[in-house]
Amino acid sequence: MLEDLPTAELAAYVRKWDGHLSRYFGPRMDPAGKRILVIGSQFGPEILWALKRGAAHVVGVDPAPARTDALEAALVEAGLGDRLDAFEMISGTTHTLGEMGGFDYVMSNNVFEHIHDLAHTLMSLRRFVPARGNRIVIFADPLFYSSAGHHLRAGPWDHLTQSAAELEPTVPPRQWEAYRTQLNGMTITDFLGAVRDSGMILLDLGIVADRALDRFAELRPLISPGLKPMDLCCEGIACTLAFPENI
Image 1: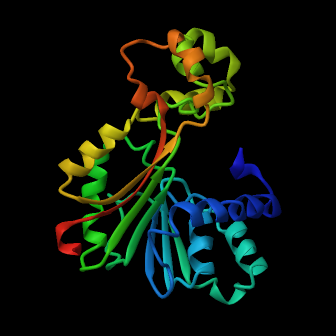
Image 2: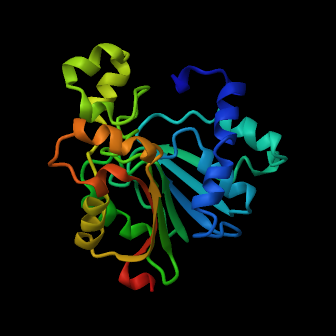
């Protein structure tokens, strides 16, 4: 597991997300001089990305206890050894965080497909973005019904073409537990409903088409006909959100 990696290897993992973050977050936010809150910061790739682009201060929050050595090593390697005091990593959630003040941006990468109460969590962000111009940027991938939505080392849509009894023996126990308990089954329409219910405004929306589209026609007969092609073939979403007071 990632948390067991030595510092150098984990720092490489933190660095490898730079291109992905630039692709999906770069067009939606400019970190320079900004105060940023990262939801689900884990080992800090989003923090590194933001600090490399001139963020003034970045706070990462994650339910798991924070390990900072890999992020610190990645910052030093990037020539940002003088910015080690420009971030903090907190163990908790948006519901348990104390008073943090306002942030220019809240960002979250590959987290919302794991959160079970979407609308409640989205509403909990409101206190962190109190000012006009503040924005929330979210990327979530892979969504549960997409080909890789199982988050396992398994084939496309295996979680929908096989029974649990067939799939479980092929998966390490720790991964199986995560599959059973840490995925929310969210579709794009579920997410948009949560955005609407939380009183937010959708400013832009992009999708990631499924990585295994070329196999969909072949595998579709094995998947329940009650599942809709749109949900099966929408792998991910990227969006910018705001509350009315941010506009």
